[in-house]
Image (cartoon, rainbow, N blue to C red):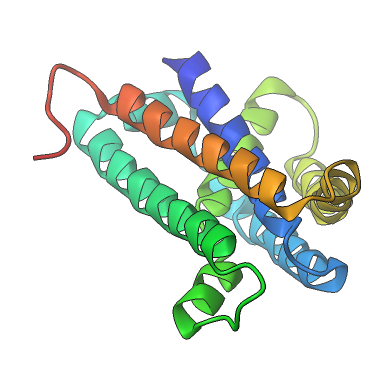
Length: 187
């Protein structure tokens, strides 16, 4: 289960970098700085959690089912962005398309919190503040740089939309897998 959650977090972060590749560099940098700031703010909650508390939280089927619903809603928003981006290429953007474009993907914040707690647990004896500030700096620098790298490697918007769609689909499927404990999540 731990590996599936780690892969899910990885794909959430990849999806976020792909989404930032549709923004301008300064916009991606501002959002990345907000992500870094969230890591710094979440430090006091991350250091008060134990590994057993987080494992119990992830083992709770009700929590994971609620998380699966959030993952699915986020994936539907990503799918909508992809479809409106493909079908309205070259046309005047509607308010709904603009809203889909500017929705950054809010699951990156719990993913960064999880990443921060795993970093704290995996490096005992290191100052927690140093770890949090290092992660915050890495996030604030890496997200916009990776988004530019993706945009430079794949300048075709349609291809990036397809990859973003597939990553979002994979996140949705992994969200369902992590919550499946012989229970039906959706009715």
